[in-house]
Image 1 (cartoon, each protein chain N blue to C red):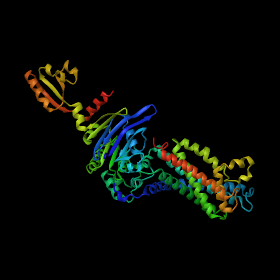
Image 2 (image 1 turned 90 degrees about the horizontal axis):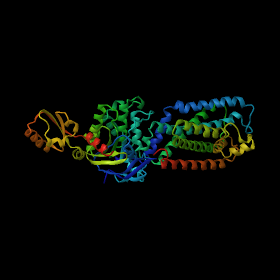
Image 3 (image 1 turned 180 degrees about the vertical axis):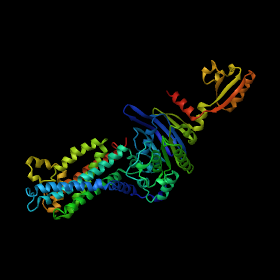
Length: 259
Length: 303
């Protein structure tokens, strides 16, 4: 082995690059299609509810909807990237190419989650650019927009990694997505403010970390939110630490990856 | 220091004991064969060595680096060709090899990647997508992936299963060259003639247990010996030679006999005995036992 050529971070960088290349080679499916889906949501819900609903004073419903749709796209695509990559590799057997090299659990975690975060942000950016045609947006606190987008994508990328590690079959992965990720996303305030819900549902929503991701993200646009952005940040960051620690532990133990 | 040190390794899959207290040492520069019938535990042992499985007990090290506690150092020294024909359908051959090289910390490794592709006749497929390759070509890429980081220890888990003669010859020529250059090679195969031709030392596993471990020459010489096949034109086998007959049914009604001999020095006394008895030999062949005979004998002996 030619030791002089070895670069300490090359393993992580290569896996990150491979994960990005994997989704970029099928960008029509992994980037363009989710943007189109989000646009359809905006067209339909925006058109139907534009004149009937006003969530925040002075903010049109279409404008209110856009940050929620962007964030929903970010979250769903970040989850899809890690979960689909891992389950495909497990089922086809090519995961062995990643398990044989001297990649640490931290490198695996960083590369998979990093690439899924990038895909989430790319799709979110695409949705954002397309929505500029439909409605003007304000940017009261751009840093909060960026922080919640990155953290939300990283959390869902991490959850996708957990799902991919846990699932042995595609239907198990679909169950994880359909019974956990989708409800948590749709019931997080993408299409509404939780103040429009009955009290009991408002209280239940406060246990949904996805709510804080979207609420904090929306604050960055309008300067208005259901809860204070700093509190949302604390919840979201804390949640990331928890799911991140769980995932690194799973990777370190080799759970369902190394028998 | 041993290239691979396996010490009291045990592995269970529920009630099945896949590996039962296996210990062996493979020296640097050896071409080592790991043989056994299906389900003997060969792939399980390689999986533990490669870090794809964890042993329930015992330890495995590569050049002194434990495969669990010092896994990064151990894996850098290993190149493993998996048994299953797996590939990533998103990438071309060159991309696949560059990625695998990068995972091992090696960037800008195209000179060696080109050389590996050349030796495995992959050069004209470098830009082909993995999906477009035949099974044999995919197998070549698997071998190339294991070699991209020039590992001092190369493990080939049934690399020639279901592949054509051309690939076998290409592969063995290249691997033999790497072995001559000092790389340790561990081979599992069901093609025993390959193991006999290539491996200097062999271990045999059966039902998770190590049932033989010796040099290839010693295994063939000690356990099975040779066979002297005779067809007689006149007369019958003298009583003095009947104890050497390998197949007793030949004594009933036959002019053909297979006699067990341990080496060439025993042939002349047998011929002298036949001459004294007035027997005329029509045809005679001295057949050297091969690894397949040894394998069958050992596996049957372990029933």
